[in-house]
Image (tube, rainbow, N blue to C red; front, side):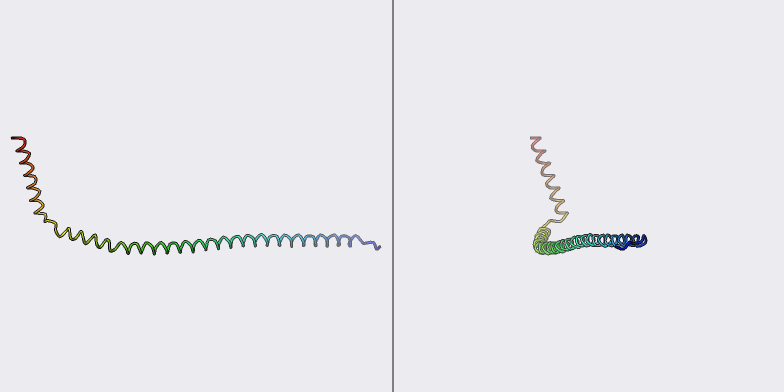
Length: 120
């Protein structure tokens, strides 16, 4: 067996250390890449879920708006009918002068009835 010189032994040790370091760096890089890939996958999954939920919310909002518009359209004829009835009532209402005369006559009548009942 040939004897190795001190320099060859040192060179062999350095080479082994460099190889071990390279392996450790490669394993660490691969582990880091796996972690980043998992984080990216998790982030992409979360983004996909949020996009799906946003789409669902937009669809629900559109459906709600459609329903509200339909209900408002159904209310319009009812309001028209109510306003028509109010206008009919308004047309038959007496003027302010007539209302004041009726009020004055009513007060005079009540006053005379009270006077008559208390003095007879």
